[in-house]
Image 1 (cartoon, protein in one colour):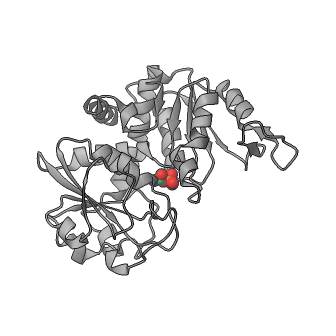
Image 2 (image 1 turned 90 degrees about the vertical axis):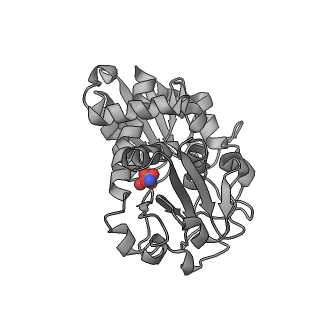
Amino acid sequence: MKKFTSFADAGNYRALLQQALEIKANPFGYQHIGRNKTVGLIFFNPSLRTRLSSVKAAYNLGAQAWVLNAGADSWTLEMADGAVMNGGTQEHIKDAIAVMSQYCDVLGVRTFPTLTNREEDYNEVVFNKIVQYATVPVISLESATLHPLQSFADLITVAETKLKERVKVVLSWAPHVRALPQCVPNSFADWFSEIDWVDFVITHPEGYELAEQFTKGARIEYDQKKALEGADYVYAKNWSSYRDYGKILSQDPAWMIDEAHMALTDNGKFMHCLPVRRNVVVSDAVLDSPNSLIIQEAGNRTFSMQTVLHEMLK
Ligand code: CP
């Protein structure tokens, strides 16, 4: 594996999932793979889970890890090709990434969307520059449009908790006070629309349709209650509009997942990538219920990263 940026890079997802479950069962059993290897982690925006689980994954594999908060810990980076750097930026991304590649065997990178320039975000202009300038394999720690390590951890979580051969998984939009990226729902759709033992449904208010390149013909149901009927898993997430790019079109509190919503499911499990705004996106009662998988899901971030590192370093 030379890069991990989307479901397509996972290759045979069944094999990768099986490898993840084996690594989770024996997390220190592959330390020969990471010996004398270094994992570099660059963050252009904040993180709790991705940062800590990636370091833990490297350690589990016997590798070392370093973390750089770009801009805060480093020189201010220039992104524009051909820039005359007589302004505030001090180092070009081209030089910085080539240099950082000298100090690691795999590079994990988190970038961010502008939420104002859809073309730039959906062409992954910043992330692709980094892939272009890196001389080592690159892992997406979340890009402008996708968060594949989160979706892989979500898949591990569903696979290890499902009680039926086929399961109904519902991705539900939920309200929020700020305009958030589409990365997590795009990525969830990118992965779960391809899983042959999942009946995948997306529910959101009209105007919140995700990019078709990721939903790939998934069933969209505008009636949230109808979508939740008989669900085995409810995955709540807010996202801003793709159509009216980056805009908040609704803050309808009726879309917040509460016990009444979960009562429509088939004793469904609740999932969210975290961080979550309690009692805005989902009620305390749901988050703290025995059917909530949020902590297990966050724990599986270690094993999604460890599996991808294993594939790249082996
Ligand atoms: N879910 C997730 O990626 O969390 P962080 O933003 O804290 O890394």
